[in-house]
Amino acid sequence: MKRLLFVLLLAITSLGYGGMCNKSGGGGDTSSGSSGSAPAIAAPSNLQATLTTYSGLPAVKFTWQDNSNNEDNFAVSIKPLGGGYIEDAVVAGANETIAYVDTLTLDAISSGTKTWYFKVRALSITVEPYLSSYSNEVSITLP
Image (cartoon, rainbow, N blue to C red; front, side, top):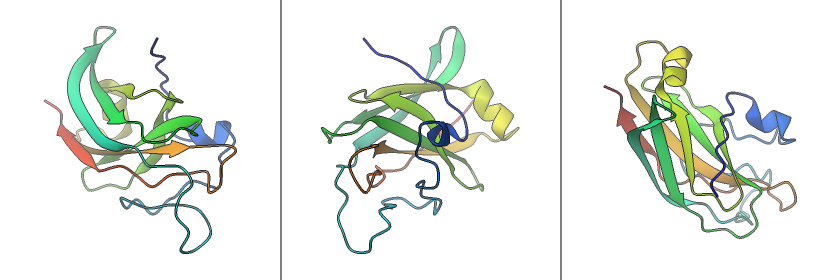
């Protein structure tokens, strides 16, 4: 059974990841705090975003491939065209490969923005460096 969690802004802080979030906004980044070491959590891949509806509201559906076996959550970061990433804005549980964000939320974050970019990473509270690298970045243009 799929659980859907809608957590906006500072979601990771409430889950105990505060201060460990990567704020660089680039794809393929890690926040290990140690240079040259590979992430202990495998990054998700094949991120896709499609327009759909969820509970009667227009929404963006995210799907990805789970390549890790030791994550506690997945987090999707979102960025409006011309803006910076809002890190870990949408969170899904371990072993889940689907999440949603309603387009009304996107509009509230950046009114009038039609093009959005997304990337996902795996998170752990027990496996250092706590964050995987990011997946591929995808974009979607709202109607």
